[in-house]
Image (tube, rainbow, N blue to C red; front, side):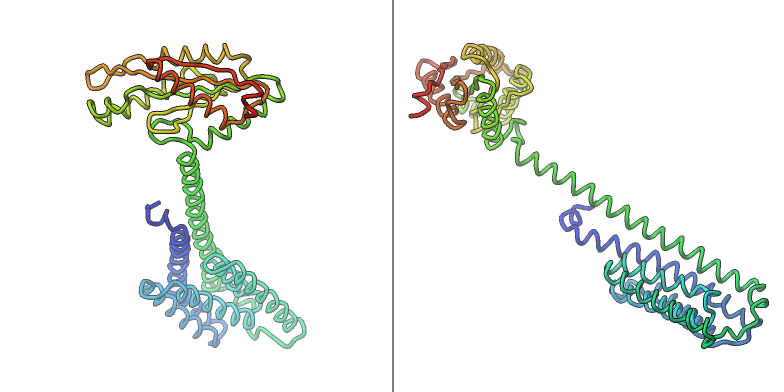
Length: 374
């Protein structure tokens, strides 16, 4: 789907309807060019009937509508098409009853209106056709309406059957193919819309550079982990990571190197963390790792040690080896004694203690109930 139509789904739907409508108009033009003369040929059997002259007029109109369709608004094209179908159908059922294709023309007009304009209009036209056919049936059964033709002669002519096959068999195939194409385009729109929504969700929840989750996702994960710890009498750990002297790296090697380091941090951490753990980028060079369902402060410290060992490994950039240092703070809360923001704040403070102590290390702390209540 083109980008401009993707940004405006209503324009895409309108185009799908227009393409389907033009397919039907093409079919109508062929019916007008071929079917109208075939219909007139039946006059050799039935004698001249006003309906034949009307068929010629409608046939010329259908061909002209197709030829000049691009100069006409879609609503005009659709309205003219429905009017032609209704006029042919109306005259057909009054003249030939169920012998002609009048009932099909009326039904087709309702289908076209429902597809190209609105389901409401299609329903209204369908209801009107039903009422009309009931009245015509009453007219023929009561003797108010009569055929006035030799039925055997009418049914034995090639032109009668050729006209009927063209209108009642071939034209429906054209209309249904238009409906199918319309449905395919709408399905494509739905598929692309779903993909766009998924991308928006990913953009809203994931840092586009590193792939780490955004802070609001971390907050939700922490809240769920804290509630789980209350039920299971477990602990929740938070590791606050800040890269040491990251700005000089950007200044020396360029932002491309800095971006690579940030992505490498998340990639390396992801290989060490459990499936239920979460890493979030909360600042330029700051990350927070949530550790739900741990059993002790020592377990959180073990994770921090593994992270530190993996993350401080040099990063290769354009043939150069860039050393990476980081300071970390580890805060652990037991049985839900702290909120998510409290845990992150405590880990942040411990990270700054690590920086003040010489950087490239970590400090940890287990939050007690009195600290959480403070």
